[in-house]
Image (tube, rainbow, N blue to C red; front, side):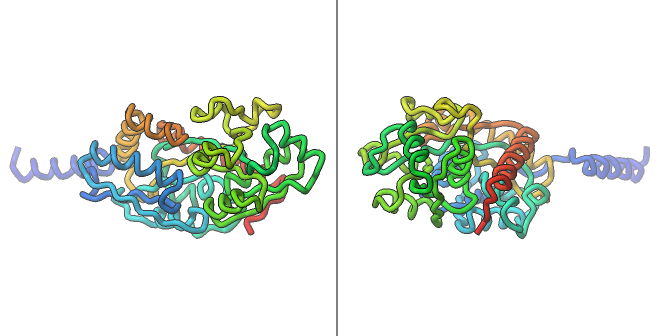
Length: 324
């Protein structure tokens, strides 16, 4: 075989393999990888992302930088990632709000399904229904009894209209046939501040946000919103086991990236992130903050997002919830 023909055959094979996505691509894509978080430093999303990023950097031998792009309930960060580079150097710690709730409330400048590609579920964690100690409500049963006896007089804070903390309250209103009043805030910090000041009675809070105040007795935990009890609060029942079977309203953060990123890179990110999420040291650290790692396949995440979107879309329609 002549040298020229040999080179032609090699070139044709390379082209064919490239078309099939078989040719190996550089990983990590750059020496510095950006992990985008849609919320400010100090919250549950940021805490979980930093725990994961530290181990991820060790494993892949590259720097992993956290980019906190807070605002608009996480939508600013999601839009940034959706329009990000196609080399996979930017990944997003996506959240339930922009991925499964916001599309039912407002017109977004990006399409969560078309513009963002799933990598793996990150962490799942319930909210905790807490009340100010001055309410004299000590149990979930007392909360329900008071709400039934005093419709429209018991209010609850949330991190904003359409947030997971808001929809947990709306779901309970629906299932328990009670009328508690939603008070939206622009984030967890102001909601918590007014709760501690007694200006609002209750709050569907993340455990990491309210933990210190639960421990010092300023807040009373009544129930958690997940399917299982929170490991950090084993004596606090779930709403589901307290008379409302099937109730489940959890927060979750999942890893996604721009849909322009090649499938081979997305699969590699899945492999690396799943490895981190299964690491005993990472599991232990996440659990301390009430976060449960939920590694899985890309297809599993896509199905989960679709299921959550259908659930919250129904709640939003039935409760006539507005994004305003």
